[in-house]
Image (cartoon, rainbow, N blue to C red; front, side, top):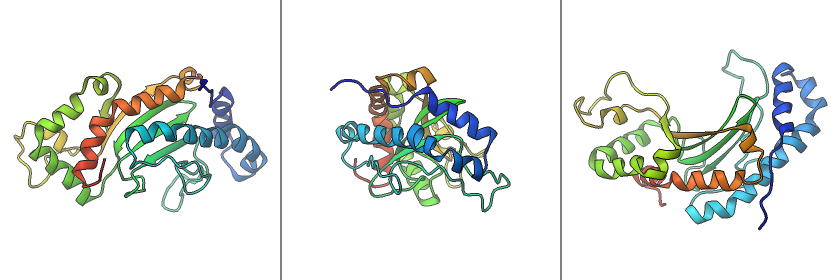
Length: 229
């Protein structure tokens, strides 16, 4: 199958303009641009990624529906935020495990905005029980954890990030050799791309290859919380 270019510079231009005009009137006047230059390309990318994702794991979902699928909505939740701008100035997709379909479950993630493009894998802000399961798996299977984050392809492309506790979590040995990892509040790994790379015809394959490189890390996390890989 021939390579396909999904994203163009017009996507980034749309968000540059939205950032300067983040209001309902401007968005409604430019909604067709959003649909044609942002939403539809991302939905096509999600559909194109689906067979690649199935090769990694049949338990993760690439759903190209415009609502309720892998595409994350552009509308911000402003109910409890001091920032009342109504729209996100980026487009993103989250490919989640079929058992735990929300932003706080294991998943692969893609994010495009004018300031940068990145992919991520892992679990962002897991709830208390999930977080304890991951920490306990690290304590009980330290060799597996080290192998997961030390896999050569993973280390070459990804950096572990997210927030961590200032002090060791309650119930864990402060002198544990993996205490830096046990203090993590997020179990996220990310890698970046240039806008030129995101607009290239081989970007889907590039992203799919990076997701494949993250599978040892993802396999550990899904197993830690009792989900099938």
